[in-house]
Length: 372
Image (tube, rainbow, N blue to C red):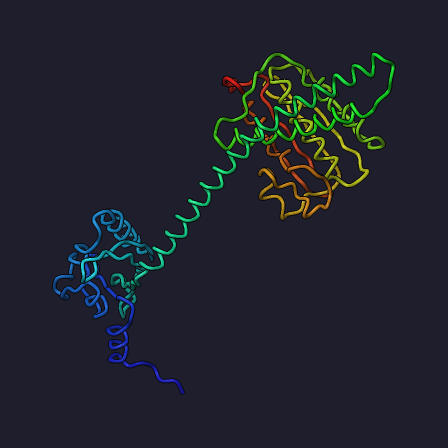
């Protein structure tokens, strides 16, 4: 049979516990500290009694520590907090303090009792890990800037030369009545690489806080949607891609950027939707805003959803379909935000719908800086 501890045994257990123990009465002032606490602070029980213990709290933590304690005491709620307490050798050590209300024999509130442990080494190790992580992040961002600088200058310049040379070869062939598909192949390949370069520069601008520069002007969103559908239909023959609209598509947007955002959403639907299934695009709205909706069959795996709009996360590891850098949704959302809008989505019942929501007129547009 088990035997309950006697009051004397309880007292010995508390007094010699490796955990620092304290108690406060109805007035929130402390009236007990065990030997472990006193050995840690190097002070007598008389010095610690009342509010004397607070003399050992680090000045930078004092107000926060005392305020939190008194608020929880008044509400009679358990609390946890970390603060620095002066050790007997003068060093301030981080401790973890947990206090709980306790009742007397009659069941009435009698004060708080708490326990503290030294977490200084753990906290310092955590701070060191966070510092190393910040240093690695800084190095990574510096490396990213260098790579993007190479992409934007050292790659773009030879690309322009290749493009110009291929265009000249095609012109010579055309004037001579010759058919040489190689020049067209080169021009298409250059266009694909330029598209990738542009996407990477969008990522750089967004991460630097500059955002994507836009130049809104009066344009017709309905025509943009039709152009995207026609272009995508020409590239994916046999795939049903439809567009429905019964509203006025007039507004003020950056035509190039918005067309790219719509194209990204539509291409995403073709690549990641159920193979061979139709893709439906529609344009709805009112006097204040418009919505471009792209719908396809198939749902987005739950594993992808939390990082759906992050760059370089295309979800290929889950869908096994599509290629590219995984920047389409990230760029579409960035373009929408630059126009004062946003992107909504839902994925359920074997269907996924993305909605590009835009105000009719872009507020406070980001103008391109020199060289953008």
